[in-house]
Amino acid sequence: NAGVMQNPRHLVRRRGQEARLRCSPMKGHSHVYWYRQLPEEGLKFMVYLQKENIIDESGMPKERFSAEFPKEGPSILRIQQVVRGDSAAYFCASSSEGWRGQPQHFGDGTRLSIL
Amino acid sequence: AQTVTQSQPEMSVQEAETVTLSCTYDTSESNYYLFWYKQPPSRQMILVIRQEAYKQQNATENRFSVNFQKAAKSFSLKISDSQLGDTAMYFCAFILISSGSARQLTFGSGTQLTVLP
Image (cartoon, rainbow over all chains, first blue to last red; front, side, top):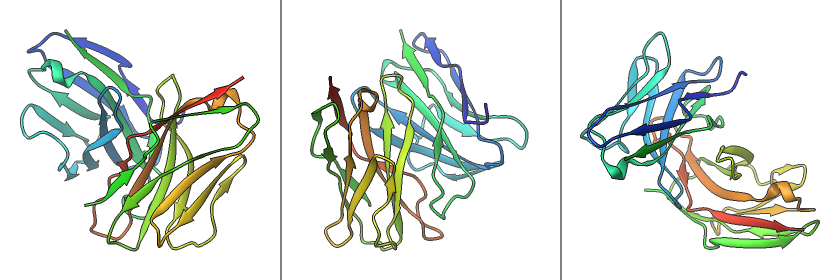
């Protein structure tokens, strides 16, 4: 499967725990985007990364949330000390270029549930 | 800031008929792309069609076509010969393409389309 791979598909955490969401972009893609979809809403941008760099994190909460895209390995979205309001679907997308309108291809998402 | 508005939360259409989903957007920029994404019950996000703002010709992709009215900032999606598999949430999305600008997709709130047998 050469598409965007996200894991896990479903993640359950208790309040106060940490959640780690992984995203492997499509082969040849070096631009990764994370979006959050709350129930009954559209997707909202969180963060845009290239290899080893955060380009735009304007949509990501300042506290508890962090993202990385290391030289080797998948992109990671980390949520520390999760709260009920973090329950959502988190989508990762990748593209071959960041600003020429190349379509962003999405993974299947990670559904995060907070107990 | 860019905004995308989908004013139809829900729509339905009979199988084999044609349906049009509306989308309007607001931007002061001139270089951008517009997209329609489909999210079926499986919750995947699937790219349906895209339109470059500098192209006057409307994009088509098999049964899917758009009516792009740049002056009116309107970007509607027409689905011809609707099929049961078209049942999904449809999202209109916008992205700037000028270097140095924001590169994230801005999504509308979605239109839930149900194709009736």
